[in-house]
Every structure is written in C-alpha cells, then in structure tokens.
Length: 126
View 1 (tube, one colour):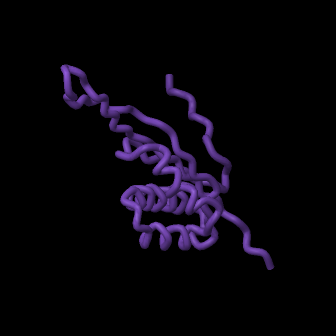
View 2 (cartoon, rainbow, N blue to C red):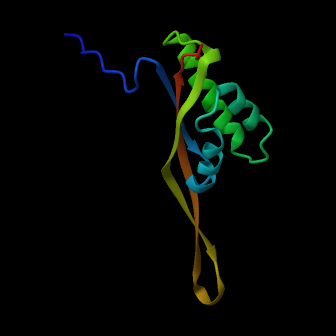
C-alpha cells in the first residue's frame, strides 16, 4: 500500500528553501535576513553579493535554492518573484570550555542556526 501524498507546506504561487546548520548566531543571521525581506529576488541577490557580512554567502545560497525550486518544481516565473518570508530559527549549540584561574572554567557556546526563505510570484500591475 502506497503512502499518501503530503500536502504542500506553502501556497501554489510560492516556493521554499531551508538552510540548516549555519555557523552563526540567530541574532546575526536575522540581521541579514532582514535586509532581503519583501524585495525582488534579483535585488536581494545583489544586496547579498555585496554585503560585508560573512553569513550573507550562506543566505545567498539558500535564496538561489528557493529560486531554483520555484522555477523547476513549481513552474513559477523567476522575473516576477519576491522574497515573501525570511525567518530564522535556532539549531544546536556546541558547548566548549576554557580553563580559568583557580580551577574554574569559562563556558563557551558556539551556536548554529537555520534560515527558511519563501519566495512568492506576484502579478505585474498593468
């Protein structure tokens, strides 16, 4: 007996891509995600290309994946896509320690985060 088909998580005129295990804190990643929310995808790609933030390269890859998903899987027009949503979540945290004076330790937390980008096709106004 075959498994039933899962329902789409996004609407018919949307496509989604996720980037997981990005080595930065969610707070820093959210600053980059905030730059691209609500913009046309070409403008968002340009801003990520020339951003001075290190994590912008990872966000650019996820955005390109969302664009490719929209084109290949959902037959959406690439020229009329906008970044509908870009939201950030926590992932795992590596816990390390650093030796301190008098037999104590200093805790070091190395956070990872994830980003989800949803692109949407908009109709051109006549």
